[in-house]
Length: 145
Image (cartoon, rainbow, N blue to C red; front, side):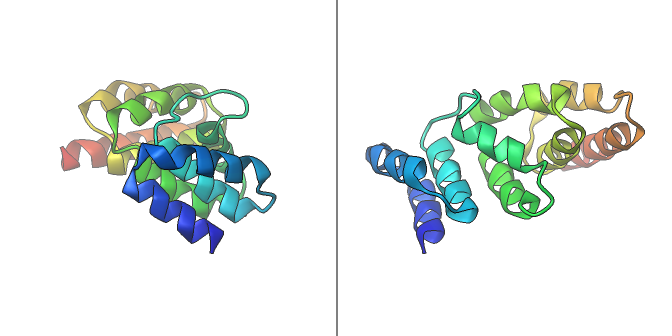
């Protein structure tokens, strides 16, 4: 219930809701509601990436086999905004293997012309799986544009 409520607040985009969600986020102990609250906070404007930021939590969750399926759709939706997309590019080009792979997929679905240079960099990654996903994402993004 808490997760669904947080997702609703995220989509309403009322900045006045941010303090209440921030407090709930800080007190939440369960992973799913906390991810939803992180999604809401990023949607409401907390787009900085720092060690304990909500956006960093979403990015870090891409490394978790158990929670990737929760974080990816949130990031797909968030990456439609240029400001948030720009905050994701450092992790796309310099993150872990899973972060690079999933963020490339996210950019293929939600990216724009500004996503092409970071994806080109990913397509030349030293890890073959990452590079392959980068090439695939570039093709999909170019076809969508």
